[in-house]
Amino acid sequence: MSTGSPTNPVFSLEENKHFIQLDGLRGIAILLVMSGHFFYKIYIFNIGWIGLNLFFILSGFLITSRLYYHLRQPYKKYYKNFYARRFLRIFPLYYGCLIFFFFLLPTVYKHYFLYYSGLFDLQLWYWSYTSNWLYYFHGVNSVAIFFHFWSLAVEEQFYLLWPVFVRVFYKYNIKAVLVGGILLSIAVRNYINSPRSYYNTAVATEPLLLGALIWCMFAENKLLKYYVYISILAFLSVLGLGLIFYNNASLGIDNMLLMNYGYSAIDILLVFLLSGSLLSVSISKPLTRVLSNNLLVWLGKYSYGIYVYHWIIMQTIIPKMDELLFHQYYFLIRILGIPLVCVVSYFSFHLWEKRFLRMKKFFP
Image (cartoon, rainbow, N blue to C red):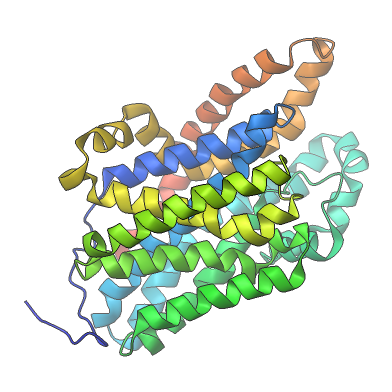
């Protein structure tokens, strides 16, 4: 097996190595997001937004692993295969929803256009994967049926640039570059000093780069060594979050103490969870069993579809159910809404998304 210098390590983890624990983490992430949106009136669920940060960390970890594995490919093939595979995974469902709501539905349901006319005026932001900047500059629109697409926009912007950074910097100390990017992201967030910073790509890059950093440690077989330091940082983060919530009990992004100082603390705790899940096979069998739970793994497998559909269903079907039942069964309606989202996501994956995923074999 090849070896590399500390500044130019050779990563050799198998591309197709599957960590079932990460599916379990995805399951936890989507449960956090759904609970935060479906049950926003219940205080404790306002912390659900951290599920998105967990998704970002996992994305940074997994995308970086794939990019490093394919560095052995010729320059053009490296980019072509990566972008083609991302296209096949993300675009069919994303653009399928936009086509349905902007073109197909208005032709059969005339009142739809009248009710969502404001949404049509903003559609360019969604087609161009830049809706996060819409919310950053203008706030959240009252008819934002695709509001949640902002995080998909952030990831897509990251996917466009990150392969270039990896290709350019892999010969150097990539971990130093990652740490520098994380510190810059923290500086940008504190400079903006606004709840809207949450939607800024530079701010959202922090968890993505943290995920990439954990992959580098893991691939170099140094994660266990660094886990001691990660654990210490996690402990300090808990103390810091305790002080923040003592001064301001809000769990939402409107809590500027939380956004300025607690955001990174939460990311550290999520990194601690990711690191623990990767090491769980050797250091924590109970954690492996929890993250390998069939329900969590199932939710993780269909998490992309669940994420796309849950907010749309919450904005369309759930309000109608509330009206029919005279707004008397808030909790019950949303409990029933969760399996509805899961069923829609399951059939969407097998009847639509899977057709495109089969074409990934042409871009190994």
